[in-house]
Image 1 (tube, helix red, strand yellow):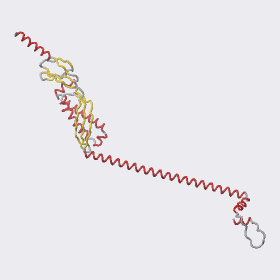
Image 2 (cartoon, helix red, strand yellow; image 1 turned 90 degrees about the vertical axis):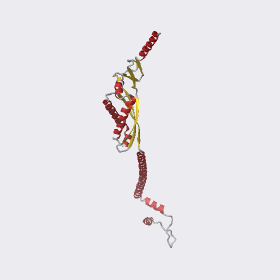
Image 3 (tube, one colour; image 1 turned 90 degrees about the horizontal axis):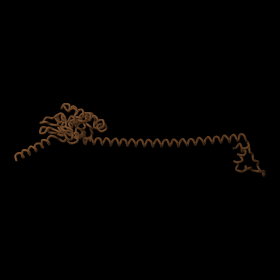
Image 4 (tube, one colour; image 1 turned 180 degrees about the vertical axis):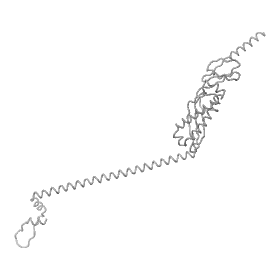
Length: 287
């Protein structure tokens, strides 16, 4: 009976020993091996792995793409208060995970102690280089400078912790700029003033264009009228010249013209019964 109990105990111990001799690391993670609390330099790959029973414990570290979202408040170059929200996508490097865990901690600790301070300091340093208006109009340039500042801050921090290259920064996005209500009101007033000025300028241009068009129309009408008068004068002068030439060349026409102008009345002569003669020369002289 005792032998059977002892055999059962031994079987249970052997089974427990076997179960404690392997570990399974989930996909997207690496295992940090701690032997009696001491971190081993080599990470454990995902999947099935052997370990020292009762001595080794495994801490899983995610190497998937992660996101850290943080807001930072800073003063712009023109002393406007700007609240900037920055989203950083990053991933931990599996090969360096043991050193990262040893010197900094898990992913949440890395985010809180490395990435968040990097965002805060970088946003403040870059924001101070631009006016509030430039932060909006030069958004792409600002983003590049913030990303470069964050990368430099993280690299320096990791180097100080002896975990160089522990983190890969994939992307930095400025998700929002928020300004004070006074600044927003000033921007609205400025935009409104610019719109009103543009409207006034357009109205002025429209009136000038209309006035110029009307003046040009009057000029064209005057030119046309002057041309008609000139042509009529030339035609009349030519007609007079032709008629004068015809009269010079044909004296009989003068008598014809006189006859055409005679009203048919004979001169009145007192005394005598004879009819007076029509003296063309006297009529010619009178005309």
